[in-house]
Length: 182
Image (cartoon, rainbow, N blue to C red):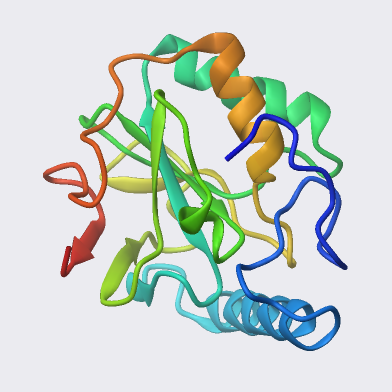
């Protein structure tokens, strides 16, 4: 992904339009899928964990959870309207998982993070109530149709250079919440 992709079609500022999307139809379709997912999450029991296929409502960018990775999230909190967007962490594992618009994986290029969103990959989502470091939890909770802006994320990663970088795609980091066929 280039450092400044700009706006693509009708995608929200700072968020890339899904690959192959048409102006109205596909943009509104992925936003509807994400809104439906958020409504479904809000309707779940506060302790329910669920499996979400990647590439439908969102893709996921994985980067280091060490100090520089947290600086990336803090910068996005300050820069992106509405805050950073949803980020999942896992106590005891060194990775952060930023939820980005679907199709981002097809354009993502960064030496500091990898992006997953291929068919047959999924992510184990933490319960809505898990917002404190124990198991898999929401470092930044999911709300509305707000995702992490991939352009701003790529720029923040380049500025802060969080290390160590995760394993190169297509294999997700071992022990994390992402699984499925490579």
